Image (cartoon, rainbow, N blue to C red; front, side, top):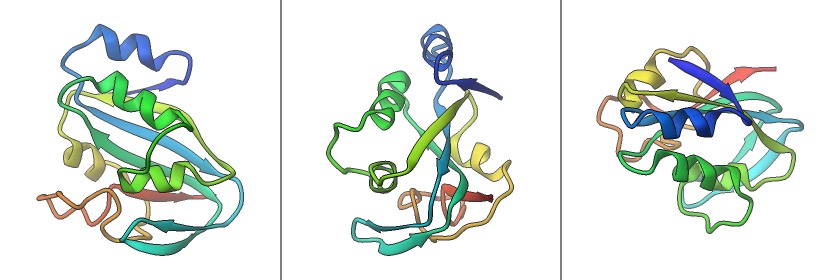
Length: 132
């Protein structure tokens, strides 16, 4: 399992076609109320978050999409990432399955179901709050 800076991750993703899972290291500077699609309106505390997602194909395109501010809101994470004061600070890339990677990380589940609508491993959420 490896985590890369925003300057390094894309070369690593393109060099290894076995990578299928990514983790976004996210910082929220201030407490922010965000309406997360039909899931809920939620007050996210300031601090550090880790979001785990996957892409069976085109992993680097998926991560690039998350890094972009110009996108339609499609997934739960899009709503959070488009809020002000939110930034991705690093990207983890893995060949292991999404739920396995998610379960290897501590942290607190603040919003049940976030990014886990299709989760069969009972993760509870694929967004974890790591604290301030």
